[in-house]
Image (cartoon, rainbow, N blue to C red; front, side):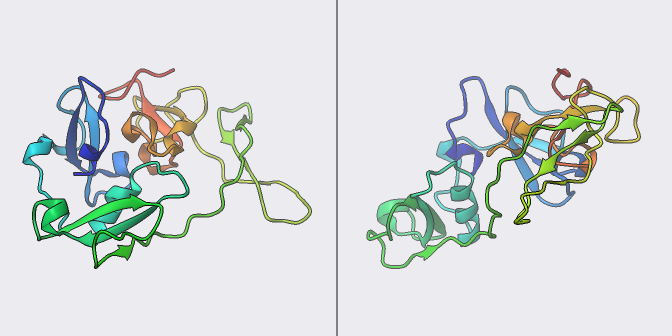
Length: 211
C-alpha cells in the first residue's frame, strides 16, 4: 500500500519484491519500487494491486505509521494512526494514518506515531578522493573546538569501479542521492554490496548505466 500512496509518474507501476542483501542491506522483508516494467531483480517481484483492489486499511498501527512516514512532510505536520471507522475508511477493521498539524478531532481514538529518534541534520562537506579511488567524507562533530573528524572511507568513488563486491563485473560509484528521502530511482542499487548507503551499483544487470 505504501507505494500507492505516492503520485507515481505516468508509465510507471508499483512493484514489490523480496529483499536481498545487495538491494536492501538485508534478506528479510520486502521492498517496493515504481518501475516501467516487471523488475528483473529482487525475489519474486510482482505488480502491486491497483488502488481499487488494495485493502481499505492497514493491518497494524505500525504499518499505518510507516506509510505516513514515507512521505516528505513539512516539519509542522505530525503522523497519527487511528483504528478505522466507517466514515473515513469505509470499513471498521484495521488502521489508517493522517498527517495533521494538530491532534485529530475527527476520531475519538488515535495515537501519535512513534519513530526512532533521528540525529540532528548537519551539513557534510563534499567528498574528496585520496587519488586511489577511495572517497573520504568529513563529517561535522560536536567537538567545541570545531575540529572536523573523518568518517570511515567508502570503497566506492565518484569514478565507477568494481570496488563494492568481489565480482569484477559489478561496478559501483559514490552517489549521495541514495541518502535522499526517498532515495533517487527508488533506491535501486544503493548500499551496493552492503558497503555503504551512498554506494550505488551501475552498468550491469538491471542497474542504470554508469555516469
